[in-house]
Image (cartoon, rainbow, N blue to C red):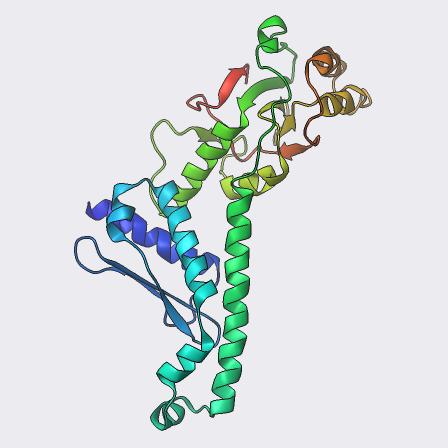
Amino acid sequence: MENTKTQIRNMLLNLINKYDLQHNNAEADWQGDSQIFMSIEAPNNWTISVDLDGQFLLDHPLDRDRVYVLKSIAQAAYESDPEDEFNSCWSRQFSEQNGLSAFEFVHNLEDDKRFYNQLSDEIYADLRKENYKLVKTGSSDIFKQYPLPDIDGFAFMVVNVATFRKELRNIAAIELADADYPDNCPIDSMWGSMDVSTVIDYLADFHSEIGLIIAETNTMDPEVTLHTLTCSELKTLSELKDWELNPEVKKYCRTLMPYFNDDCESTNVLCAQAIPSEYSRSVITSNL
């Protein structure tokens, strides 16, 4: 229990730092067995509390907690009212203690309200990136008919993108809580250190249900790219110059082209620092 509470508190503190909500007075701490207090602070020191259900946080996994906390922060920021804050705080004593005139205090509150509005927009934009629509562009059954090729210097992996993104978010939540990675971690890195947040951001514009990872494995810093399984993306790969891509890889991409449509935009994502591991449930087939 105490370990879980520490991880949740660490997550809150890291979110405060991530969104620049600490200007000397922001807090996050447990008060009793299941009560937790969180406050956030704008640059001119307007501090607002965030209503959180501590028992909910204890009863759910960290990745779900993170989304709940972000939505709660965004709601508190959006609902903040500078007029209520002025009426609650302003007095002659307040003016003398803080060295502010009423005009200066109103200006600060208006400035902080703009900050809170931007914060709310930023958080909801971040959450929208995590809930985009995936499109069926073909069937993974085709890889039974055309297995991944054995090509010197290259390795391949076909992944379920929704599962891959979920596993990335789980690891991001663990990192946010300063917790240890699980023993059978579903995410690995070809470069030694992981960077799941960057790959999550890259995936915001990736919309095919399944993707093809192509890894160049004969270099010191392997180049690993996740491609949409669309006809256009496979065609682009097949038409690269021989010095840009191995001819055998190009031939395999041409073989797959007829079996995938263009119902989503063609794109690719660099992912060497966060790829599915041997323990990932996202892997459909692999020779990596």
